[in-house]
Image (tube, rainbow, N blue to C red; front, side):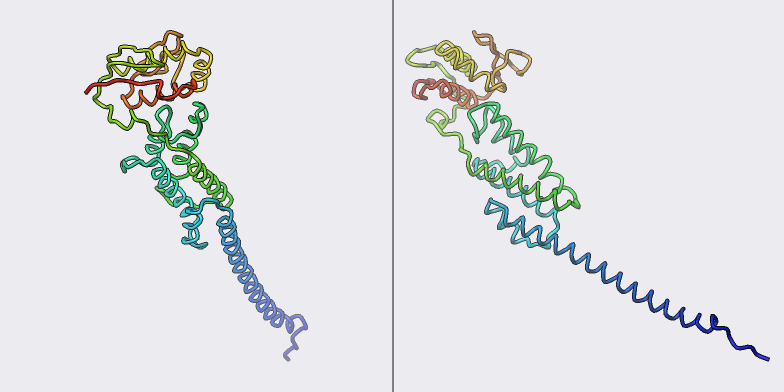
Length: 288
């Protein structure tokens, strides 16, 4: 005689069916939550990018980012900021040599003592600006130029703000002023006479021009010259080994004389102006 199923046996299939239905609904809910989290993350990234767009001061950089749109990968914004910085650095300095880019371009237009763009008359400050732009090229511009990088959004904001600041600094700097002697191509010209405040000094080489100019200026105002030398350690040193080809001045400082004619002219004129003299008080007679 067949026995009737127990209550447990009767309820088991009902409970199993309920459990399966519950698990199915739970999985659907978890999938929806995951979708909403991904959507929220995308919206937060887009909102972060749009916030960043509004914070950018440089118009060219801001417009470039707006054209990219908020869906562009984060490393694309870093890459574009490096391209824009290089473009405006070249444009501001009127550098036409396309072979100079990245760090080579920075060195060409910002490296003391022959910087085309002058941010400060203080040698140490100008050296700091040069290193700042050099670091931006090496640390910010270069990496995404050569590979794809999954940047954190907070890091991108920090790097973009730095690049934006460097672009703003470029807008405030000044190009090294032109002068009559530098307007001429002094390459290949031989100096024959140096005039400082009406005093004539016979010279034969551009090295003579540099040394005689510095000695004369140091004699005119020793303290101001000392201040100028101290502020420009890339130009003057008490250590001969700091330079490739050093020449000692009468006051004990060494200077680098392994320079082009044009660089020596710029070096001398910077020193003349630093001592408060007019450029008209300093002149070099040449023959070619």
